[in-house]
Image 1: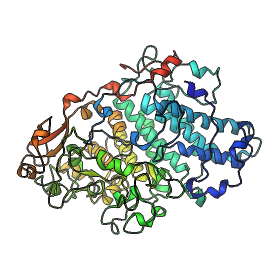
Image 2: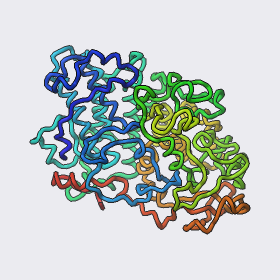
Image 3: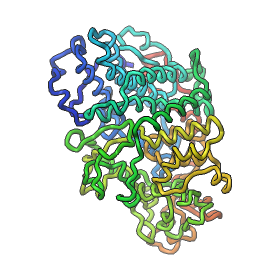
Image 4: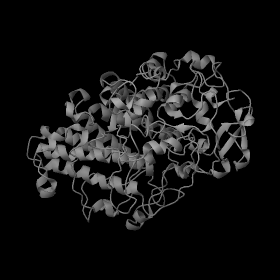
Length: 599
């Protein structure tokens, strides 16, 4: 835990959010110390602004500096290697190992010091506290944010709400339970909600900062996450808190799952009704490709309709980037191109335009060519993928090579006209961390989890808005009943498709308690039986597929053979994999810490 006591000066990012002029007259940080820095509201504003650099995003972020592997970037939070992706990764296989260091443990605690320093100095501030309410609220938000990300990765962790010194008891204390961490997160978010301005109250130069609606939306996300974790996973990952894990100690007045779901509904409804956000739907100008251009939107040259970031009022919490002031500096277009190729499961998960799955829809055109699969389907299918020849199928590469085993290329988060408009490391679109579409999904899922039902009116004010943008018919209770669908599964399907690559899939499978089932299934690729792949040897050579082929259920209603990219025998995801192991360096530094169960 050396990172707890590492002294860090708050860094002012003077170029973020296009309002750098606000900081031009600030004293340079190299001429001040912590003891004299927090003297004016402008000092607190600058310190709070620096916290935004700690959000997950395109730009690699300086962390605790323990090793060369201390930088935080987008790639660990795009759900690479899940059941939806044909590119295999250790986390999806259940083949992680215990490591000496974990940069996320180190960095989130490192950053918590910055947050707690702001709150400490706010307590000591002699001026009018109302003048620093926004930076205080921002600090409370980020304290909740960092603790929640720690909880998602490790389960119960030590709660840190003060600036630690060498003799601070937290440095040698045990882990707090997940329930104690959640209680702290919810408490901090309540303070943030009370102090932060609404989106409508933000000055033009402050657009992109956390507002009251952002804090409410995030609290709704936390509530749904924890309510469903407790419902479907329960205490199975807690350990006894003595020999393993963080235990199951629950604070007094801890909310029930019903209470959490009820509040998640109320908060998401408040954001939906009063936040002033709207889905970014420009399908008319963009040939039904809104769900592609939304995720690479920069200036008017980033899309054929000449739209820029000012047209996007969907992102609620986001990392802000700018080609001149703050470039992403990473090769995200190249990475998503190959690493997000769809699994067979994901290809069949996209609905047809009539709102039905491929195995129930008369609109489905079959598998003879891969191009056929894209016909009459959810617009997001074309928005997320390219590289399929018109009227044909892409060539398949063996799964053991560096090639793409499906031949289908990913383009969500890929710059338009790459690498002409933006070359590698130049992408500077804003990076979404929570947007209105997710709030709709939180609302719908919370309603169904609480009541076991959801009305058509509630579907219309939430999920059906997303489906309209995707060119898919409404989800209704009649549709579910007439075609023997499962409403909860359809809500979860919408979440999987809409939030693809947005740090959702692993967390969702875990909180639903089905990660073992879904991640241990084989990863399959193209259907080859009865398709162009059997007719054209130049597209597919079965001999190079070391795992062969396997029959799979599909849209035809009968089993067909598909290529095997990763067989079930390679996959061993277990309940212990719901949480990452604590790094051994921290266990050695603090003997009161206990490792997560079975690690």
